[in-house]
Amino acid sequence: MAESVLCILGCGNLGTPILESLLNAKPDSAAYFTHFVACVHSIASEERLEKRFQKEKESGKLLISRGQNVKAVQDATVVILGVDPSDVENTLEQDGLAQALKGKLLISVAAGWARQSLESIITSSQVSLGKGEKTWIIRTLPNVAAQVSQSLTAIEDPDPGTPEEHVKTCDAIFSQIGRTVHIAPRLMSATTAVGGSTPAFWAIICDAFIDASVAVGVPRPIAQQMIYQSMRGSAEMLQSGLQPGELRDMGTSPEGCTIGGIMVMEEAGVRGALGKALREAVTLARLMESERQGLHVNDTRENTGNLSR
Image (cartoon, rainbow, N blue to C red; front, top):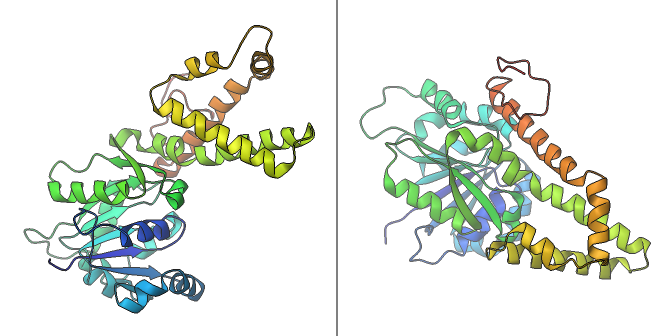
């Protein structure tokens, strides 16, 4: 089997679970790599990875690199850009890094960075691109549930000329940490919020139910167990094909406690508040990427663009 090396530039909340899942990939998987390089910025991150992946480091399968990004990219077959969005530009503009990316697949997990913006930074630093030296960029948006291999990763439809093997490799990588969905470029900003922000929203909803359970006498550990399992079971039922309205109706009966609680939620405007929260998150995601260009008619903030009210 030919040697293949995956370099992860930035091993934080997303890079680390991606690395862990791929270290366990089977040899017959398209997500299998013979060696890995994890690039970190701080001593603390280096020590964290050394402790977590001691066995892989000692075997030579994993190299933890600090301050050697260019060398790591030069040695890589595929590169994942996993640094914080605020560090993307500085990372890609390092002397020699764009040249090291020539002809390779770069997979971005950085929210707020369009493929065209990444391409602009890289190509402006590359000199004399020859045939087969184009850096192929695929933009993706995993979420924090990658830490338990339950991410929903949005994969942007790539440049039409992108080699099919690169697309297959990208799909295989993110299938290791959950489910994937292919999204048109124009929907990626919305997906940043729909797929990426909602885990935090679910956490707040769960926390509210747990506090209410404690208020009526249920011990907190038991309340947590019950609410989490209720959420998990509901998700399983919905993913099986059951519609939200059908699930709601299955749990309600005339004069019952469930319909009583639902009426309180409706009277409080919970449905509208949740919808507005998500639309606000989408608005901010669009602003991150477009700097107030191309706002959508259903964004929640005052529209200062060209759209009519």
